[in-house]
Length: 545
Image (cartoon, rainbow, N blue to C red; front, side, top):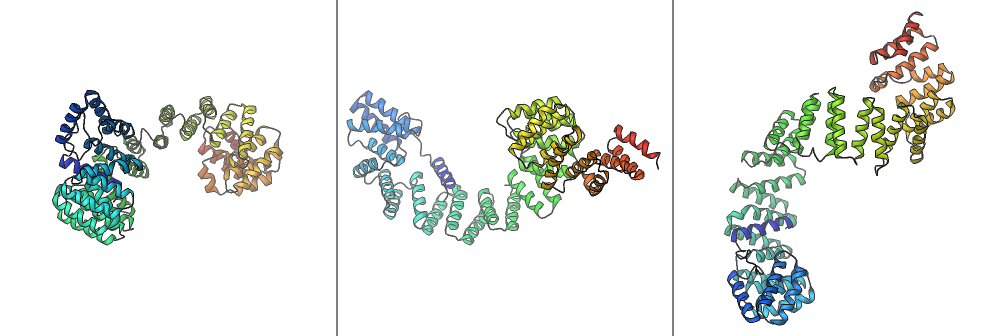
């Protein structure tokens, strides 16, 4: 039986039977000693030992109640020296020695307590605990059983007995729990779950399933047995049976938002999108912030191109405020919806909330770069690099912002730093190489960087374009054109990069391929109508056709 279920049993028993009737008394001692006994013993202690003794007793009892056993124990021990043989003190000392697993104290106080009260359930349970700790499991079980004959409703002893029985004899534990369920019908659901758990520990999955099914048939309005049964099916790789259980829960009016999400997820796996969406929407109606339901609804809105709804669902999720990735996705959807300023504003707010999150820093800087706010992006990235954030992407984009502001010396220093950290960073190699080829006379140096980038990723159209531009700058226009022409048109379109078309146009123009050059310049102007170089060159080559 797992600890979670045992704890639940304890709570239910203690709640149902009101064992803690004396819980609010300042001098409460161990459960199992009645309130009357406790009060009379405390009164006797007060009369016999005086007010100071009683105050110390109350202090120890307070610590015990707070779970500060190591603080309570020495006080009880000191009091016991003044009152050797006191049953109440022996009870507390025995109980605390078990809690603290103090072997010496257990061997000292528990036998003394049991000798003083061998017919009391509490003393029997203490002795059983001692025997258990010494490996005498069968003798301990017998003593727990005898204790329960004296005090059949003592929740603490019940739980210890069932736990021990589970280790000794699963069948006997199941039988005892079934009897317990008959005595306490209100606790039937949690007992049923524990019985199923015992069957599973015996590797008898079929009996666990049968027991839960039978219980559900008799008690269709208890939710936990449904959940455990569905969990068994899920663990066994039987999703269809698990789905049927969850649907039965829903029909019985027991489905939580989490259960509705599970049903929706199973329908998604079956390809039943409309049915799945029905359950995800119901889950959201039941719990507006349910994160899993929000995620599925976000995906549906994204697939439909409804980015406004996708943002709305993300923001309504209970996970949104604490989850940086949700902010990033929301900003992406705003960008796809044609709202770059709103996207950047959302990322700015996320950056203020999660300043140490590398992804937030990265995407916020990208948003600023898309808006051509280069100095602001530089400031954000520089701040990140001065913190504990270590990211090659941040360092590379920092170099990009410097290049766009013509801070070339500083840019080169950052790129060299990046390539020292990672000599095989293809993006950095290509960026640095292209800069050297396009902006300086260090063409051969730049060519080496570009060739290294292409060797690392020969399919990257941007890298291939840089290599072609290296040959163009050297004056080898035929080789440049051959390389550029080798890039698949769909790759160029996927990049949505006007510069590759421009390079093709310029190279074709150098080779006097006038019609091809004109077509490439037109492609540039479709993507970038304000491109002055393409417009100017198109006029020139058009006259040659």
